[in-house]
Length: 204
Image (tube, rainbow, N blue to C red; front, side):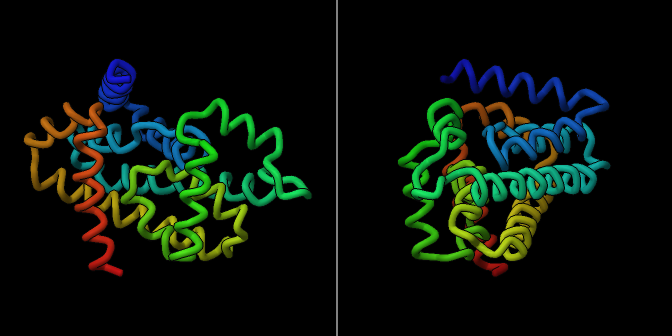
């Protein structure tokens, strides 16, 4: 597993040095928020590090990709995730069996979170290690108002990436150490989640 994350890290570094990096960021945002968890935060930080003058461009590209991907995930959850017997369709089974991040257990956790918090959980979802695609699909399955869903997705991710962009600009070259270890999610993700959650709670 460590090797796989290291390869993703190296790939992110290559994209950061390419002129088409923002478009890769947008496509990764679409995939990450809908069906395939990807290291979008690593790529985002790398792009800012190498091209700090384009920071807001990267925030815009990534947020737009996430909203588009999340909307696609919502529609999939709403229309093709469950059949008329309220059982998983073949489409849903494929994702649960083949795609990392999707699982029956994960779906159950999202169900509990929605039961306790309602659509408010979407504002905090960006600060959890749970793939956002699960929240997108589940929002469609649970018939969350699509306008509230899109607004919450846009707000939550905008806050997250604007904060990370600000932090990266403040840290400067020191952020290199952060990027170098993002392939070890068990050590970086929990810390990032705590910080981002506190910021979101303060803003909300």
